[in-house]
Image (cartoon, rainbow, N blue to C red; front, side):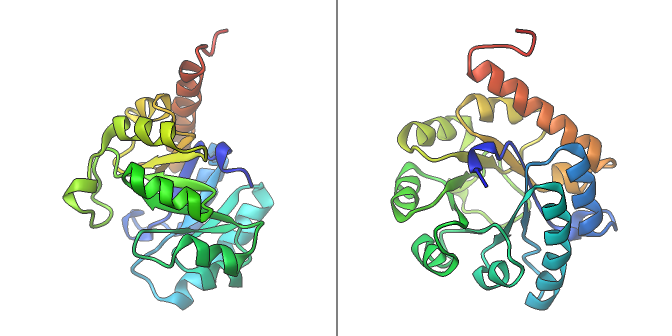
Length: 222
């Protein structure tokens, strides 16, 4: 459970999966090389997320992929997830840490340097920064939408914990996000709504790895 390895990060949302189940999408993403899966399904009831979480826990554990739960610390505990991801309007990072313990992964959504520094000081293990290119997956305030790779660079310069970019990211535009200092990218529709989620995951992972090489001053041919 090392968030610095969260290169390709899938956030689930069955409502845009073209009629496929979330476990189907997650299996395909695992086959495509995903590093971490976040159980989101924001508009569903707690029992649905719990039952789905148990199924995803089995899939991810078998594959050695981390499973994070969005917002719901109680569900993360109930399904023995690897951790939780909280936003600015959710329970604080300190509360998540107190409830889940020192070994759990606690991520936090931020969009400014100030929020990032506060989350790091509170004990977050990684930050989700966005929306990088804008998002249609959730309501985001105008000043937090489309912050760009430039904001990624500002935040990665300011904090010492890993950063994951999210919001409007595709295999075509993920490179600059990683080159700006992000450990990886989190996506919903790029994988979930793809005709071939496995291929989409593999393409995204390849982009991330190539960009890491560029950021480290090397190329894949070296």
